[in-house]
Length: 491
Ligand code: IFM
Figure: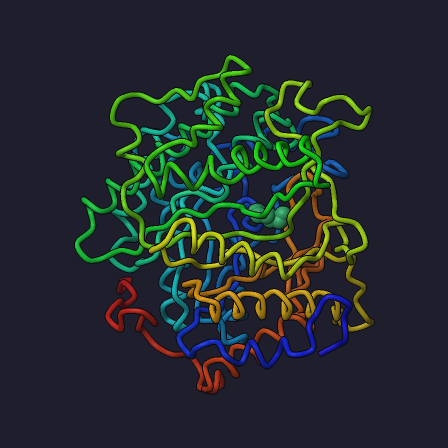
C-alpha cells in the first residue's frame, strides 16, 4: 500500500474485518462500454443523440465503439473472474432489447444479455443487473421523455420484458441508476442527455423516474417465480453548510432536501419531504403526484444501492454575493471543502464522508440493507512501455473507501457489498474518454485490456476478505447467493 494523504494507516486492517460473504465486485453500464451502437437492431438512445450536439461531450467522443464490449464480452467476463470478483454490475441497453422503447422484444438484443448472464454464471460471478443507466430510447424522448408520465409505464413494460428472458437466472435487479443525474443533470443543468434546462421538467422527471421504479418493482415481484433481490441505486453525498451562517445552513437544508431526501423519502418513507414541497412551491412548481403514486413508489425493496464519489458544501450566496437560489434553483452554490486531495477530475477525496453517509442512511432509513454500487476515481493514468498502469493513487483511493465502508459496518450500518466503478476505462459521459475510472486499462487504439495495480489490489483484497483462493479455476454453474441458479442450456 502506498502512503497517501487521505488513507488512515490502519485501512488495510479495517478492511480485514469485512466478513467472508461481503460482496466485492466491479460495475459498468451499457452505453459506457458496449459500442455496437447500430448493430443487431439497436436504435439510438438519448446519449447517441446528445453525443452529436456540438460541444456536449469532450473531444466529440461518442459511444459508437466504446470498449467494444459487445464483441469482447467473454474476454471481459474472464477478466472479472480472474480478478476473483464475485459479482458484476452491468446495465441493459433498453434500445437494444426493445428498439424504440415500446413493442416487442428484439431477440438479437436480448440474446446478448442471455449470453452475458450465462458466461457470468459459468464463471461463478453473480450477475447484478441494472435496467436503466441513463440511455432512454430516443423515440421515448421524442414522445416527451421522463417529464412525461407515460415513460414510467413504458419502463415497467420494458422491465417485465427483460425479466421474462433473464429472470430464471438473474436474482439481483436494480431498476434505476442515479435518477438524480437523469433528472437534474439531464433536464435542469443541461450537461447530460437530453440537455434540458428547466427546473420544472427536472422535478417532473424525478417523480416519473420514481414511479417507473415502483411500477417495475411491482411487475417483477408479480412475475417472479422465485425470490428476487430488488433495488434502486442513488447517487448520494452529504451537503453540510459552507460556514455556520444562517444563509449557509439554510442552503444546506435546501440542498439536502433537493439532492438527498427527494430521492430516499418517497421510496423508503412513502412521501416527499414537506420542506422540499415548500421550496418548490416558491418557484411555482408542483411534484405531479397522482392518487396512489406514492404507494406504488414505496413498494418494498430489498437493497438500497448507494453510489458515492464526493460531497460538497452548500453556500447561501452566489459568486456575486447575492442570495443563492435567485437563479431559479432551489439548490444553492455547491463549493469544494478545499485543502483536500483531488482526483484527475478535480473531485475531492473524502473517504470519511462515505462512513458518515452510510451511517446517516442507516439511522434515518432503518431496516434497508445497503450495497455501495459505485465508488471509484478517475486519474490521468500513465502506462509504462508494456501498457501497465501503476495507479497508486487510485489504489489508495479504493483502499481508503473500502475501509470507510468497513468502519460504517462496525458502527452499525448494514452494508453488504462494494462495487468498484469501474471495471474498464470507458465513456465517461460529458468527459468523453478522458475520464479514466477503470481498474483495467483499455487502450483506445487496440482495445487491449491490461489490469492496473488497483485491479491487482482488489484481487488480493477479495482473496483476503474471503480467505479462500481465487485460483481454483472456473467455478461452475452456481450462483453465490442461492446455490441453485444455473445457466440456461443453449442448444
Ligand atoms: O461513470 C459514472 C456512472 O455512469 C454513474 N455514476 C458516476 C460515474 C462516474 O462519474
